[in-house]
Each structure stands twice: as structure tokens, then as C-alpha cells.
Image (cartoon, one colour):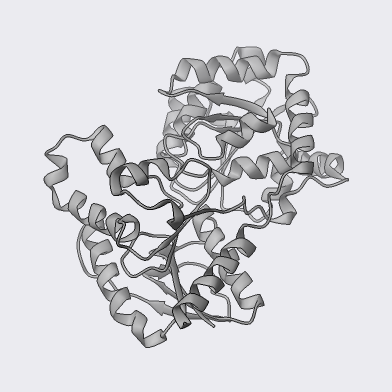
Length: 377
């Protein structure tokens, strides 16, 4: 079969980007041809991919997305794909990988009626409607339970259009038998003493992932804890704004931005606690990665996989609306309370042993094959 994937921009360390890559890798393993339509591909492109780079000339993000939609749909017939799936909302998809929250719901909840008259809203709402409207013929691959509620509320999407994918965690994220040895070696690399606290945050898009909130919480730790705590941020984004904040709060020597990394599994085992106080994160797959690595977490309720943290009892989920003081208090509490971090780690390991964390790409590929078979009838 021919499978086409649509993504506005690919870069090597984005969560949704890696999910797409794993799905097309699975399709390739099954013998299917794969074509990718994108405006920009950063990093090495797999040799099995037929890459279509879409030039854009429009000004403004919404205008460029509208142009991307038009040009992709003009080129798709040339591939004659049996199934087309996208990780961005455009028209013409057979399946949509739902890595974002409902744009229309957010516009109604946080913006005035005037905003909904503007071209930006009309463009993004139209593209969202092309995926979720009752008349659309698009299977929606949900990443977290309950994700469909807002889409059904605003678009009346039929229930049978939704399917829930399992978490797609790479097997190399699992805690290994020599985790203690890996922890010791990786911490030595960063000059961390045995009793130092290693805080870790992973994710591209530092604003939406709540890096500012994490830095502020670090700065509010009692001096005894702050003096032996280091905060490491992994992800592809510009850290300049956050470095200035750390300098302003006198914790610049405690904060290090590592960029995109290939040693995430080792970092997960080296760290003492993951911070993920995101402003908006529809899935936050990194929380599931933390569980299988045995790493305790403090996150916000807006994170899709915060439900897994609660189920596993492997950390603290902060309620909404977000309160900085509450994050500060909870960070201090988990560091000071004897045995709390160890208990969260034990709970994570036990939960990971019995849960299905690894078959997202296989289930997604199954769905694409089923879609292709139906279209061929």
C-alpha cells in the first residue's frame, strides 16, 4: 500500500514529530510505501521516505497554514495514496493524529467574540472543522482518554470516528536492570554529587511546557535545598528568555539548557524528579516515559497523560487554574518529605510492569491499513 503522512514541520526532537516518525517506520516495516508532505524537514530523512517539500510564501502563520492546506491537497492526487494521515489539521485527511487540544474550544474560552471574526480564527476553525465535522470522513486517533469531549461539543463528531491509541513509548525508555550504574555514570558527567538533586524537564516549546514556572519554583526553594539542586532542560527551543529569568532570580548557576539530546533514556534514570508544569500540553507523552523509567513527576492537570501519573501514584498533579505558590510548595514537599520520592519511584515501576505503554505505532498502522482496505472496496 501507499501511505502518505502530512506534517507542517518536522524536527528531530518534537514529541508529535517522533510519533509520526515511529508510525511511518512501522508502515515501512510492513512493506508499505511512504510519502511525507511537509513545509520543512530538519535533520536526516529516512531513505524509505518519498519527501515532498512544500514551499510557502504567505505572511503570517494562519495564512501559511492555509497555503499549506491548498498545496498539499493539490499534490496528493499525484501520489494516489491508499491512506493519508496528518498530525496537523488540514482538509483531505483519512486519519488525524490528535496531538493538539481543540482550537475552537480554546478560542471560545479565552477570547472575545471579536477574535472569532478575525482571519486567524476563521482559518484555523475551518481546518479543524475539515477534520471533526460530522460530514468529514476522517478517523481521529486520540492519544489520551476523554480527549474527544471538546471536539464533540463544538463539532458533533460521531463517536465511531474516534479511536484511542495506547501510549507510544520507545522500549529504550524502560528502566533497565543496571539503572543504578547508569544513574551514577550520567550524574558524574554533569558533576553531580551523590546527594545533589537533579531536576529534569523535557520538551520543545519552553513557553507552553512551563519552563518559566519551573525556574521560579527552583528559585523559591529554601537555601539548603537550592544550594544542592540543579535543573536541566532538554528540548529544541531558544533558551535566551529563560536564561535571563534565571539570572534575575539568582539561579543561573543552577539551570542548564541541554538542547535536543539522544541520551534521554539515561537522563530519565539519572534524574530525581521530572518537572512538567505545562500551560498547554494535549498529551505530554514524556510523563508516560517518566513512569516506565521510574522517575517521579510534578505536572499540571492540563497535561493529557497526567491521568497516568494519578493512576500510577507516581507524582503530583497540580490542579487548574495553575498557582505558582502551589508548585513551589509541592516541589519543596517532595524533596523534604522522607521517602516520598522513593515511594513515587516504586509506584511508577510497579505500574509500568502491568500497563501497555508501547504499541501506539502498531495500532496506528493497523488503523491505516484498515482505512486503505475500505477505500479500495
